[in-house]
Structure formats: C-alpha cells, structure tokens
Length: 278
Ligand code: NAP
Image 1 (cartoon, helix red, strand yellow):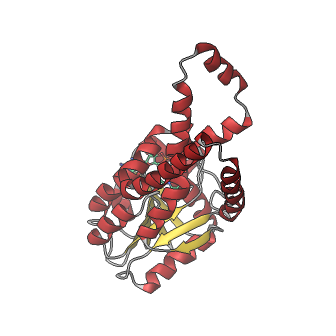
Image 2: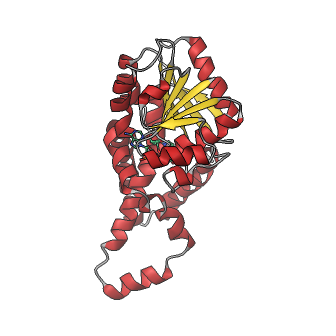
C-alpha cells in the first residue's frame, strides 16, 4: 500500500520504519526540509518533502503531528487526497479530534498507539516501538467496516494489541491511567516544593530515592504534553480529579481519626486492585 505519514517525529518516524519493512511505500511529509532529508537517509520513508501534495496518491494517511495541529492539517490535507483515502491520526486524545475529523473527511478513523518515550523528534524514531503495546482504534458508525479492517491490518503489522472503542470511552479511560497520574504526580512535586523549613527541604531532596523517582516521573515530564492532556481532555480529566479529591479527603479523614483499621482495609483493596491494571 501507499502509506502517507505527516509529522516525522517519534511516532511518525517509528511508524515509517516499521511499515516500510513490511513492504509498504512510505510517503513522508514533515515541517522541516532537514527532517524530510533525514527520514530518507535513515530509510524511514521512500519519498519525503514538506508539501501535502506528495500524498495525493496515498491509500491511507497517518497524521502524527502534535495534537493541536491534527485538525488544522486535515483541513488542508483533504484538498490533496483521492476520495477513497483513509485518514487516521495518532493523537493521545480522541473525542475532539474524531468529532471534527469525521466532519471534515468521512473516511477519518481515530487512533492512538499507546507507546512512546520521553524523547521527541525524528532522532527518537525506533523499530519495535509499538510491539506488544495497546493500539486503540475509535471508529464511528459512519466508518465503513472495510476501512476499519484495512487500518487494523496495518496496525497488526506493528505487532501492537488492537483495542476498538468509542472516542469517549478512550478519553475517559486514558484520563484515569495517563492524564490523572500526570496531575497527581505534578501535585506531589509541587507539595514537596512548598516545604518552607529549609533543612527539612534539603534533607528531603538528599533522601529522595526510588519511591520518589517512581511517583514523580510523569509529573516531572514534558509540560507541553500535560497542558495538551488538560486542554483536549478537560471533561474526563476533571471527572477523574474530582474523584481523586474525594479519595484524598477520605485518607485525610482516616489518618486524622487514627482509624488504622479502615486505612488498612483501603490499602489492602488498592494492593489487590493495582494488579488488574498492570
Ligand atoms: P514529535 O516527536 O515531536 O513529532 C512530531 C513531529 O511533527 C515533529 O518532529 C515535527 O517534525 C512534525 N511537525 C510539526 N509541525 C508540523 C507541521 N505543521 N506539518 C508537518 N509536520 C509537523 O511528537 P510525537 O511524540 O511523535 O507525538 C506526535 C503525536 O503522537 C501527538 O499527537 C501525540 O499526542 C501522539 N502520541 C505521542 C506519544 C508519545 O509518547 N510521545 C504516544 C502516543 C501518541 P519537524 O518539525 O522536524 O519537521
């Protein structure tokens, strides 16, 4: 197949490396000429340039730009495509993208590979990034099942585990396991930074080890990504944060009342509950 990829960064570049190995012809469009050149040199794409015109013969196009650019790019892209081209995206939030994307192009199918790394850009593109990771596809009732099957066949070639759900279910689920943890982890770091007693603060910094490393990792990551999550998944994130506030209040209450027995029940329940998430 002729596969178009827009945005040759970590996700787009990794898709190109993998799918080209499966015998597809990869047409890559990126913002910078130097990235296009690098993509050709690294064997990520067969052809590449900065013009969407390159994709006029593509059978399927993956939009792999930052979230905020997916819809603006689709608005330009539709003037270059043949009517039967399937368009998908890889954005980490689905509701607003699928809603607008479907209105612009009836063969738009939302997608989200749940794999990544802290690195960005084409230098971070790598083989096997998607292997054994979930890849969520969020078709609407208006999508043809043959188009959804075509997308699934390609995703299968990545070695990813396919999950199909609505964009709403996707956004509520990822609010729990991805977006809420970023905000909680950021609050944890911020709470520590609020320590006013200098010796205690310095000692906490010196003593911080594996526990703090684990719990602060996602809150200490790329600020732009956190803003995107809040901006594009506001409703689901607020719902999760409100529930989290209730849980925190409950724990404060148990500790204030020295109710160690009920605190123990709660921690036993969370110890068991965690297993099913991982
Ligand atoms: P990235 O490494 O920064 O790659 C995005 C690339 O898009 C940039 O390298 C840039 O390439 C290109 N780009 C920027 N503006 C463009 C434009 N106007 N036209 C064409 N290309 C443009 O980001 P990423 O991590 O791959 O994320 C891309 C998408 O994947 C996002 O929507 C994100 O939500 C989603 N996602 C990310 C992860 C993750 O862990 N990172 C996981 C799952 C999904 P040049 O400027 O070099 O040309």
